[in-house]
Figure 1 (cartoon, rainbow, N blue to C red):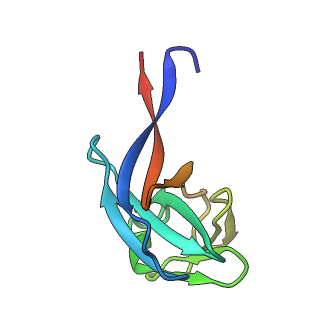
Figure 2 (figure 1 turned 180 degrees about the horizontal axis):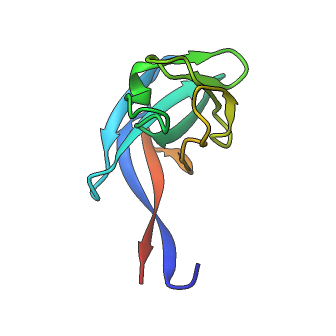
Length: 111
């Protein structure tokens, strides 16, 4: 990715309960779903690739699985891969860093 670099953008306080999901908006306007599963924070696009329902209104399942609350598509939190349809495309994931009581999401910027 020539000309791009990853930058961190603060999106939330790091006070999530395990299984909790929240929506945040990046400075680009894109919405991300921030969550915590098994003590680990994660971030995915806050739009199900199947029909656009907010992933932040879904459910975190045991074993690192995120379920869309609309049609029940499930995704692997680690890499966004589809586990079970009706979705056929992966949900986009973002790198996450937690420091100083805050959650930061990695975003790309062209330079």
